[in-house]
Length: 266
Image (cartoon, rainbow, N blue to C red; front, side):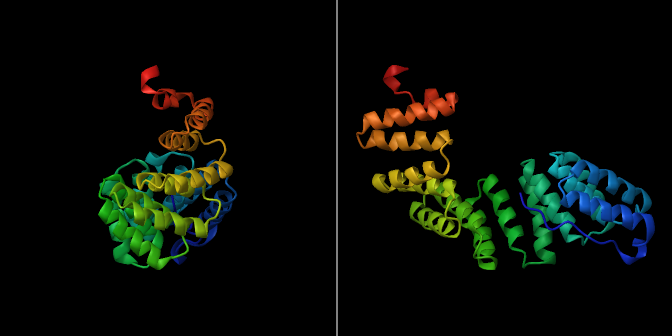
């Protein structure tokens, strides 16, 4: 998940003294990856400047980093109540809701962010995730399109749009997007893996195997990729090679055994 940059200043009204010092400590600790200590510092800032929205937003980010999304959402709620135009807090709450698969609520927050500032590519990207989660793949693609226009160098946007195209059965478009993702991020194993999946759905098995080969070079511990390559080799009649891939997949992830074992041997 993305998050807009942590807020680094307090309003002038509360900028002096202990509140600002505590807030500054929180920012430093957060940036150092010391999220528990950052929360303690933001606790002091909240106590000394309860009317300031910024410490609640930043403490929410620290809670989110610790996997405490519920606590993060509570802090974002307070920040937004104190300042309904607080774009960062709205975006961050949307991300926390998205992490809880609360897609519709997340979309409402992203809508408000876009209303306040329509030029942030990451917001369209995240709202695209939410639409994808709801199975609304056309809407997801529309958002990924806008994110790509605003930031054409983001490999992740092409990759995720490729996933959405694939869910709509538009495999040629998916291949094109995975290719763009790979251009921008040449060691993107999952992009190779998913381009291979699309090639296989198009019946282009040789191209699929070539991409699976590259994906395995980049991520040799990924059991799914071995399994995928094995299935394609099986379709090509290369049963011995397929069984080697299935063995590698099961060795890495025993839960795949039933999925990869031939039906007549179950």
